[in-house]
Each structure stands twice: as C-alpha cells, then as structure tokens.
Picture: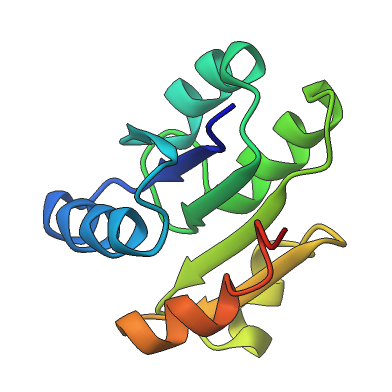
Length: 123
C-alpha cells in the first residue's frame, strides 16, 4: 500500500516547490495537498496520513493548532514536519510542537527536506 503524505501549505508557490520535492523523494507516495489547517482537519481523519508536512502561518488555523487537533483523531502516529520562517524560539509563542514533530526553517532546500525525511519510510 502506498504511503500517504499530507502537505498543508497556503502559499501556491511553496505548495508547488514542496510538492515537487516530496514527489521526488517519495515517488510512490500518495500526496494530498491542502491549503489550510481547517480544510486539512476536515479531510485528514479519512485520509489517515502516514506523514504530515505543514506550514505554521496559515489562514483559519495555524499549523500547530491544526496538528494538536488532528493527531488524536488518527489511528496511527504519523511523521510530522513543521515548516516556518520563524526561529524555533519565536515559534514557541504559538505553542509547543507535538512530540514526534521535526522542525525546518523556511526556505526549505531539497537537501534539508531529504535529510529531515530520510528515515520516514525506511524498510
């Protein structure tokens, strides 16, 4: 069964760049792209992602609030990668990262994404 990756990003340019990078890294994965945390929250329990990549600053709900609301609704414990232009210290003003979450500061390079996700679906 193909791994399911949920990409939550409101900026169309970042959506395109990140989806291209994710598709290059995981060509067999099923990638679902959603423009904000609210819509992701409504569809993700049915999608049941194996991994979630989310921006922090988005309309309707921020990425951290979205993650804290979503993770208890999932039957698995997905990999989580939080992307933001904020530093880790400044990000803490929005709340804590979920325990399993990794953090990358934007702009995200292909190499940084590859390194952060290297062990996601290792056999």
